[in-house]
Length: 258
Image: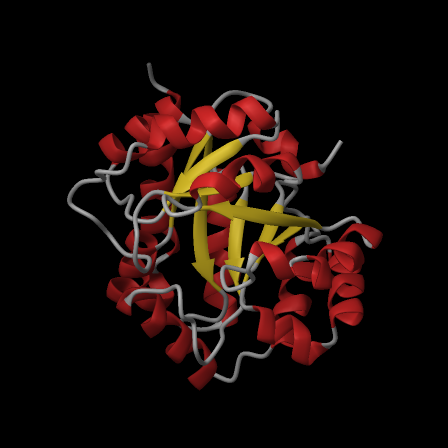
């Protein structure tokens, strides 16, 4: 069984997203540990990229700060290796096809396997081109996470049938960032996914408050939050870990409550 599935084995999952190296890698390590200790079931680790097209201004800012601090893909792999000494929950990379391509896909997936990364999300990788990375990812036991958006329509069934790890359901059109409300018919998307696969699905994009996380987790298998966590990092910088821990605790408690 994919290690990622274990994140969904005990009820609804809470999945925080963190950009590695914002403001520095030492702080990232503290944040990851604080999130894991406070109930995160799986953590998405962003590998910074100079042109993160799916991201709104908050996460774009995190990418710029991390790159300015000298973060490289190699340093992120070293960070994960270090974290794996004591953090056992699944890790998934979120980055862009160009990062993997320029690193060399086979070398990248081999390092994921060696460092203990369970999956990868590439938001700019079209479904039609996923085989370029899917085969080599599978070879090294890395789940290539599929994304399903409100615009996926007739492709949802096809994407779901081939999904592995978990499915990332994009709640809103546009880029990442907090939303005052989520108007997409998530239950319809999730229903279609569930007709075609038993791979768990979690909802992300636009979730920032416990009540939103709770509502999305009710409709799916979990909730993903990124921008709201990056805002805590913006505010507290290298002192952010306890604040992120508290936020994760509140969100986890919201997704599991009836």
